[in-house]
Image (cartoon, rainbow, N blue to C red):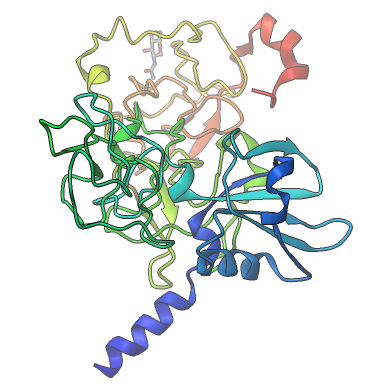
Length: 374
Ligand SMILES: *[C@@H]1O[C@H](CO)[C@@H](O)[C@H](O)[C@H]1NC(C)=O
């Protein structure tokens, strides 16, 4: 038993209070004039402390953290939702909103769901939680149970998820059909463009925030990879792995993949319909990730190794694992975000080489100035 208590201490010590928040860089929340007295200013405290105190206060749903000219933590009773507060640009400030209030999907049974859906899956309007009409019930809204207005909630841990009493006298209660975060957005290919909100790994470990270096130190700092959308602690795929992944908050496991639904339509699509207009065959654009031509040797003329072979070089780029990367025959490709198309060579003493005899497309040379802005 002591070991259990000891382990729990170790694990929870690495969880940042910021994990409960979604960050918007360079933004602040400005309360409408009639609400300004509901803002709590806490000068001089750290970002972590600001987040922690917000989660502990039943009144706090978001905070602005001002870092210039001085540190000010501003606790707010609302998230940005137009009725009560507007999100404004402010380069001296970041906005952190509690995930459960801004997320449109649920994790698990959704007991912590605090969103604003107020209709059931059949389209019936929900009954206000403080009202006992048309349906009498035992629930009483409080500052901590989230039973607000007539929003769908799951106060009793219903396995189907958030529900409500309906305003239809014939129908006492009904589920609201709020999607699971892992099903909300599906992925094609290896999910490099996944921008959904799953923040747990396949074995259920909570993800580490990309903007933090603990418990695991890493190179994927969000500001260094702006096109990878390394938001909060959401699963992403910045390194061309087979599926989206994250660093975990468990000190014993550095990183793990995430369980995100694959798009069905994609698999039933014929190879022809999969053709993307951005593919090129005689030249390449950007880093050549969409090059699908038939050059099969390196810049210096060494024949390439076939992608479906593991000789002379063993490698992880199985054509089946990376089905959207065009790993056919022994053609030069760029499945991993290298600077240009490349291949494993047929010489055992030279593992990989670029295929720079493939030229850049003329329109790409002109567009050079805008690369990086995509
Ligand atoms: C490379 O491609 C050319 C033309 O398609 C083909 O004749 C040749 O056999 C290929 N070489 C290798 C090593 O696969």
